[in-house]
Length: 260
Image (cartoon, rainbow, N blue to C red):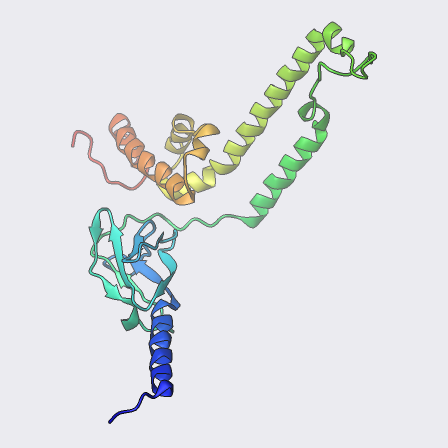
């Protein structure tokens, strides 16, 4: 006749608890998603799990995600998803890289000069400091002569309305000038030439026609999208330029034959 053994049930309970904790424990999975050639990292690839967790690869195609051992991992790009990979079959100490069967349009490597960034930042700070009184100018209707309640009307503001308008107009002019300098800094000839391959005089014509506005930079989510804007418009411009200037050397090495 069997007897009740509380220690045996306690051990069984602890084992079940440890198994549940192990299943819920999160592991760090990281790696890089490449195109079919395996040479280029793919930005914007969705990294998804069956539990609902997810992330997106960065501009170099890299990702990092934390998942449980009971989870599965899959990748999706432009609506096409890969098979699911069980996390417990992924080596914890090795990057989990993946090649997708797509071709990635690449951009020339762009090196951003640290000195150029420092020069622009210094110039911008000096510009703000020089006109600090104008940028910080904020007239108030309240103030000036104080009444019984301690708050009065700013008579100087009322009688100097024209002066205030001139100051505000000057500040708007300085802000526009500052914005144009920012565009000059971002949309510079060295960068555009590197990405498009255009040569003078086509380069100058392109930069005049496709110069972005200050507001446009808020629509680019990252530098990659901004460089795509330059590259794609540069290709279109080069074709049109070659057709309109058949006697001029192909501006971007596209070997375009007029009329074709």
